[in-house]
Amino acid sequence: MDFIEELKWRGMLHDATPGIETALKDGMCTGYIGFDPTAPSLTLGNYVQIMLLTLFQRSGHKPIVLMGGATGRIGDPSGKDKERQLKSYEELDENLKYQSQLFSKFLNFETGKNKALMVNNYDFYKDMNVLAFLRDVGKTITVSYMSSKESVKKRVNTGMSFTEFSYQLLQGYDFQCLYEKHNCTIQMGGSDQWGNITTGTEFIRRNLSKKAYAVTTPLLTKSDGTKFGKSEKGNVWIDEKFTSPFDFYQFWINADDADVPKFIRYFTLKSKEEVEAMETEFKDNPRALKEALAEEITSRVYSEDAYKAARNVAQILFNKKANRANLLALGIDDLAIIGKELQTIKVEKDNLATGANILNLLSELTDITKSKSEARRAIKGNAISINKEKVTTDELEVSAEDLLHDKYLMIENGKKHKFLVEVI
Image (cartoon, rainbow, N blue to C red; front, side, top):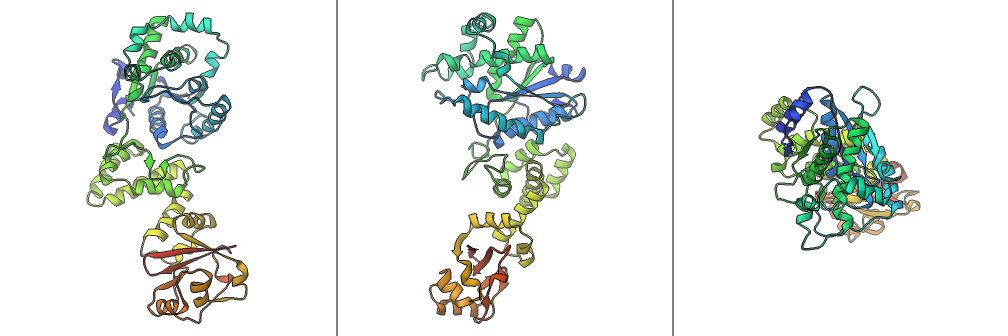
C-alpha cells in the first residue's frame, strides 16, 4: 500500500511537504501524531487521526502515538478564538492514563518491525529548567516566524498569553526529540496543525541539519458545514463509557446521505475497488451503504457483538417489521438502552406476583390508557402488544413469568406508542 496514494483516493490528503513520497518509497519510515489529554477520553474527531496512523502502519511504516503529558498542560491555541481553561495536573494525568489504553484497540503495539510505539512528551521536559528551555529551544525560532503562523495571527487582536504563544515551540521540539531518539522523520495531523508541524520540520533543519516531513488531513465537516463528530447529544466518543454502541451506531445510520461517500473513505479499511463496488451496488440505496459503514466501524471500535446488539435495538425501536424473536434476542443491557429511548414506567414486582389483569395493568399500574374502557377498546382494535405479541382478550393475566430477563415488559399501544415497563 502506497501511503500517499492511499490518502489521495480517500480524500484525506490536505497538504504535504515536498519529497515525502520519495522518502516513503525508500523504506520503512517512522511518523507520529500528538494527542493532548485535555478530554476524559477520545472522540470521533480523534479517530480521524487514529485512522491516519492505522493507514500509515498498514502501509508498512512505524507509527508513534505521542501523548501530550507536557503540551496538554499548556493548551494548543490552534483553531481557538480565545484562551483555553487550563486543566489540573491531576485531571490531565488521569486522562492520559485512560486514553493510552484505548490506542491498543486500533494499532499494533506488539509484533513486527513496524509495531507502534507510545511516547509521553512530558519525558522531554521534566528535567529541563526554564533557562535550558529558553537557550536550547527558544533560540531556534524567531518571533516573526512564530507570529506568521495562522494560529497566532487569528489571536493577535483578541489576545494570546505567552503560554499559548510558546505552544508551537514545544510541538517543534517534540518533533526534534522524536527524530533524535526514534529516527522519526514525519509528523502528521489535521490541517489546523500545519503551522505547528512545519515549526517542527524547521527545528530539525536548523538544529540537526536534517530533513523532516509534514502531512495533514482536511478537517472533516458535515455537508451542512457543522462540526464532524457531534450529535444532538454532544460529542460522539469512541468509548462506551461516554457513547453507547447503540448511539454510536445510530450516528452513522442517521448521517446525511451526502456525507456517506466522504465518511466511508475516511473510516473504512476496505480497498478503493471494494468501496467503489459498494457505491455502485447501493447507488440507489444510501441506507444500505450507511448500514455497511455502521457495521464495519461499530464492530471495530466496540465489537461485533456490540454492533449486532445495537442493530437489534434499532430494529425494535424503528423497524415496523420487528417481531418477537428480535425482542427475545436482546440482552438485559440492550433492554436498558431501549429504556433510555422509550418512556419507561416502573412497576413494583409484587403487583405481578399472582398475575395482573391486562386491563388493570394498562389503566391502573402503568397509565398507558386512561381507563379500563379505553384499554378494552384498544385490545378490541388489535392495538395492544406485550413483548411483540398481540393481546387478543381482555381477560389476559400478565405475571412475572412474562418478564424479559425477570425485569422488563415491552408494551405497545398502536404503531407509535411504545413503552418499557421496568419491574422493581
